[in-house]
Amino acid sequence: MKSIIINPDTKEIIEKDMPTFKDMYAEIGNQCRLVQAVTVFPNEDTLFCDEEGLFNSHENSFIFGVGNDGDEFAEYFIIVGKGILLGADEDGETISVQGELEYYKRRIKWNTIEQTTEYKSTVFCV
Image: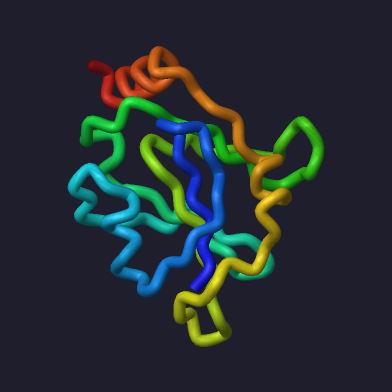
């Protein structure tokens, strides 16, 4: 099934075949054990990430905007490590992503390592 991979380490957003839902763990990398569905779009596309991304040694992050289509988003999520977009059918089963790559590219802003470190320390009050 077609997925969209958001990689803050390489600053790339690409389409890639994801044979099964379980392949997502290996694609996220960094010994990912749990995935989290961060947001669901009206077309049932869902952004997944490493649920333990803040605890793991991911160094880079990105901001994923949702809501409005302009420069200002209604809300946003900070994702530490890779993000993966997949679709869902009417039964909730994972299918190919439905949205276009360019649509999702407009919703990404990259964070620096310093911004990611600051975010992680703020969340955990280290």
